[in-house]
Image 1 (cartoon, rainbow, N blue to C red):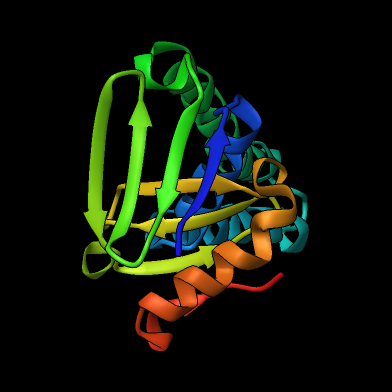
Image 2: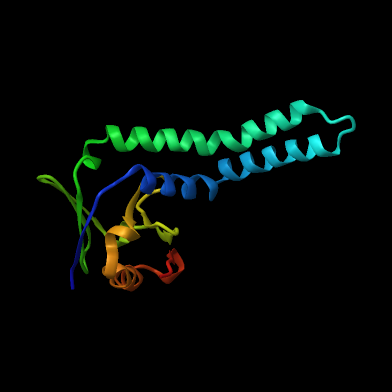
Length: 161
């Protein structure tokens, strides 16, 4: 069985992935905790130490803004994202066609499959992933989730429709 679909990478789709990746890792979690603690420090000090509020807001807002800038840069500078990516999922693995270039990964190379409200994300290493935007999958979304679930260890799959 084969499933084929095209993906046009946009800043919004990349930003969604970057937010998920960052805020499900230690850096994002620690950043949020520090920002919240600084704001709590502002609230509980008497008289209020405005510096806590200012730094707390900077810490809380820095990562999302930096990720948005990075997503814009990555989508605009990566030659592969200028055209549509054509994916072919089969029993052997995942193929991505970009122009004349073809890259393939066996299912055993996929470490984890997760989803966000906008993307299905297949991690092939700690920091690299294939993004399958739900908007681009359309009616094939259920078939793609079934294909992934069939070929991966259930402990590594966290997908929902």
